[in-house]
Image (cartoon, rainbow, N blue to C red):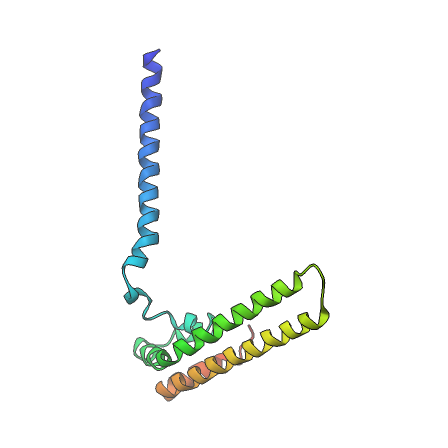
Amino acid sequence: MSDRSAPRGRWLAVFLLASLAVNCLLIGVMFGTRLAGPALHDQPPAAAQLGGGAFGQHVGQLPEAERRKFMLAMRPFRPGIRTARMALVEARRHLAATIAQPDFNAASVTAAFADVRAHASALQEHVQEATAAALAAVSPESRRELAGTLNMPP
């Protein structure tokens, strides 16, 4: 009987060791990025700066020096964009809560939709202002290349 339990115990030990290693890896990844400080988060990819859309992806394809100029020109606008984005998120949360009310109030829902539109418009203005400043920082060739991407279907 002890002959059978020895292989089972060995496999159990291997499984537990592998599980421990995977858990340590996951914990290290989760907390490592937090403990590394802001250096990892100082320069988000250009696509993330522009909401991850197609235009931002094309900025990411610019030569390194041009991409760096673009991103540095965007940097002063990041706090305003972040604030506008968070305001839009909050307006959407408010809209969802208004819709979910037990007693439906069409006027409240209409007002919440208007608030979402206003915050979306404000965010769009912030992003467009930042993008215009960033486009001014890159070469005419890079601007032509990026302008060509605006005519492409999504």
